[in-house]
Length: 447
Image: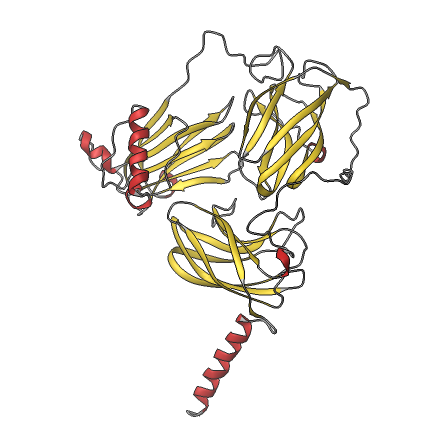
């Protein structure tokens, strides 16, 4: 019996190795690209074993590497395919903060798209960090995107017709103006024609917008016509004929939109996997103020109301669980840069006792997706970034944070919409904290 024990152990180890490496899989050359992570987080891929070097449909691969998670206490690590336009399976595993090795197996079941490994919140929601990878053989085909995208070219074939043809019956071409065009390098949207049931573009109207786009900053994206409401609580008129998935390059678009509330119409790029817009252009009837889509909007800013709210500060006792400090923030007319701080330790310089020793910040959008999170600015930021935070704080009139403190800081670009800012306890202890939101300049923290 004693002699059989090493034999059984050997069988167990052999079975584990067979599960880790699919039959016929060999180590293949690969490239990684577009790593995007929160401060303190990272994923490093060290080896890819696959049954085919092209990583095409039917390929089973094992990806190995290491991860570091600091921005959140727990998360899910998953591997899947993005930008396919169809539902695809994902393989995931739960992880905790720290650094560890990982090994995950995946079988490619659909064509098109990009393979990536990502962090996602434990409770669900959009990923907060990812890295793409592709096989270097097979010409970069299969389900992966080459590291260096080819130069965008205008398609020579007729774009495919949408599943539901857009009817322009009862619509007429109307004059329009465009404004606030903001794009990443290599991207552009040009509106060439607007047809509508009335020239006012007011609630109750139907609008068809036509134009061209160029996408160079990402491999694919969601292009859509959308309305930023003048007041919260309205209904979105978005439908299948008001958006489409586009690939890098140039092409045309035609969208239909039913206006249901006062607001600002725009055509915008969104990440294909979900998230905030990364470029768009507003349009409106000539002579309208700003980008409002209605001359009889429910909320109209008087000409004398030219100021902007520069700061929101809330001081409260923060405790674990239900004691999280929560505040709502709305961004209305255009994108805004904001400096957000969760101040605990630095309150001691003002004689405040019982402060929250290790606050953490989290910002969620209206869909409940995590936009960004942060812990100690002392450990999560480099010296150059801390200097940038100090410059920003001084520029908006905020008091200086203690140099070695564990206060939490975020500097974000927020697109129009509603957001929730939360201050919680990192170490499970209670204490007094100050939540601050400042309208800041467009200064970007150094890498």
